[in-house]
Image (cartoon, rainbow, N blue to C red; front, top):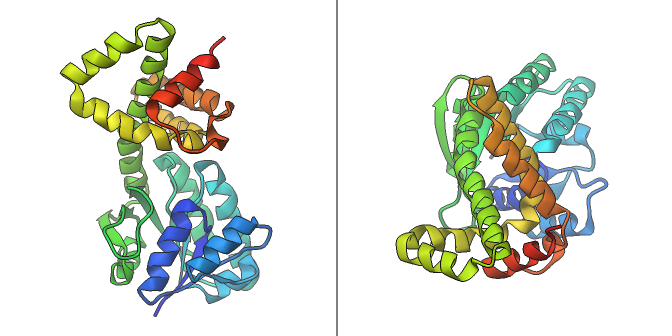
Amino acid sequence: MPTIGLMSPGEMGHAIGAVLAYNGARVLTNLTGRSERSVERAAKAHIEDAGSDEALVREADIVLCVVAPALAGEVAGRVTRALEESGSSLLYVDCNAVSPQTVRPLETQLTTAGSRFADVGIVGGPPPLDGPGPRLYASGPGAGELAQLRHFGLDIRVLGPDSGQASGLKMCYGALTKGLTALATELLVAGRALNLEAPLMAELQSSQPELLDWIERQMPSMPPKSARWVREMEEIAATFELLGLPPNFHQGAAALYQWISETDLPAQPKRTSAEIVAELRTNLP
């Protein structure tokens, strides 16, 4: 039975931890300084509090880092310090929506501290306990070792031995799904601002019904995530720019999500796509 350290029990992280615990793994986290909501989530998911980063790395066989992209480096630094202070060795798995060029320096930092390393790109939403969950695409020297967690409820798909492969796949996939959500949001707000909402929606319903249905399913869950998606769009833009591709589209998507994150929408109850468009129209200059 492996012991899994989880950094940290957010929306996706606690759901992954719950699946692992449900299927027989021991799951630890460090709840020091975490919110009451995080403490409640961890307890409900049967995730134990190790009390400190040092205690967590001493006991864990594998540490999964599942945080917002902007926090990936900070958490890697915390685990690096804990490894150096404890003299422990484990498999560190970066599961964050960051670019290949962000992942590789983290691998160097952690392996220098004595860790093994795997890179994971998560495609899909938080997993339920007893049904199909997201795909965890894995690469890097520790990907084969990570694959043992298939026996504990995770859908792990090994891509290859090079760190950055899994993150690259995540960048390409997120470029489509979150990029298309940004594009749809912007054009629908523009249509409303131009007093063309009704004919625009009628045309989309007539010529693009499947796309419109997808937009109306995706948009309601976007506002609470908009602040996290800013950095993901920036990471995607950086990935494309390094390849010689124009980064501008996803830089624009980052700017759109930044604007949305600064409205009242993220703190409001879940809204329909039409309500979100109407609210954003009122926030235009």
